[in-house]
Length: 332
Ligand SMILES: NC(=O)c1ccc[n+]([C@@H]2O[C@H](COP(=O)([O-])OP(=O)(O)OC[C@H]3O[C@@H](n4cnc5c(N)ncnc54)[C@H](O)[C@@H]3O)[C@@H](O)[C@H]2O)c1
Ligand SMILES: O=C(O)C[C@H](O)C(=O)O
Image (cartoon, rainbow, N blue to C red; front, side, top):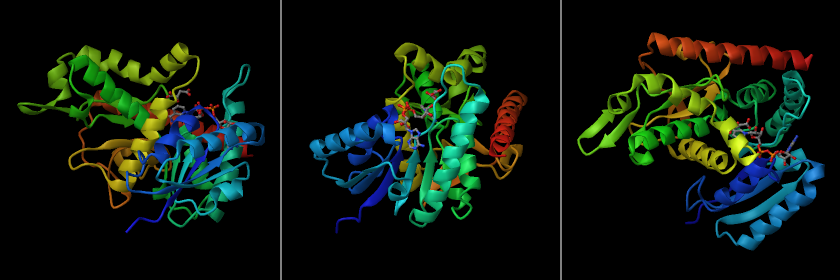
């Protein structure tokens, strides 16, 4: 029997990531090749005409899994009945703006969209925040949607995770699909800590630690980390636009693994509400290694953290605490 359609909200759908993401969702990349979807697309009034153009293209693409499209600038209509919400819409930093100005705009957007989701989304709606500052926007959404369970609110660090896999695969000349269990700790920002201490590569002689195969700790503790931390800025420099296809693809990976589960023995990175694991302060949205099953993520416990890693975990937590304080100061 055919499955009932799942309603997926994409905010900021007329933007760059939205344009790459909605066809992926409509093709089954996010929820599987046998899962029909109804797309809800939200943008702001100045982007309404462009949003309607995206809707026209979705119709023209005749995706068999796409059972309906809602394209609207009304947040209540957009949020009504959605099972999954991918929050890409936000206010970008413009010339002459201070960090606090950008934070203040996004805090107010995420506060009001939190209320709309809380009141109108389907029960158990899963939320993924992509828009920057992703961790802090997700935290604000959590604070202003208290009836959405904290387990259902996350932010995107899977792009950073995939970037780390990509760097290791390039360095070793192996298939990216043979590399696993890198970890992104912390903030989706340049303080994030890409950690390979538990990562492995599948080889004809069995699974081998990345550190052993790379055999260059100076590179792994130096250039590898900074390359992943600064990859977003490098893409902006090269394209004059921020990453879009890789961000859209990572959003699909994030939701797919969350809903359908991670493969046995594999963990991925998700920005989730800290419960104090690994001595990360509780009450931050922080990227951890997680496994998923039955539609729920679980932080991987018991990984050894050396002194080098400890400092990096703490530094990115410190930045998130400062962002949280700044976000709260914008609410006053
Ligand atoms: N977490 C990550 O890995 C990651 C990666 C890349 C980009 N990003 C972030 O994702 C966001 C989107 O990037 P983009 O390149 O698509 O930007 P974009 O400017 O092309 O698109 C953003 C869209 O959001 C819309 N928007 C603005 N305010 C809105 C609101 N209140 N409600 C609904 N829509 C609204 C805009 O009109 C625009 O169409 C940015 O914040 C970017 O920094 C995050
Ligand atoms: O938009 C940015 O600042 C960069 C983006 O978050 C990315 O990681 O590509």
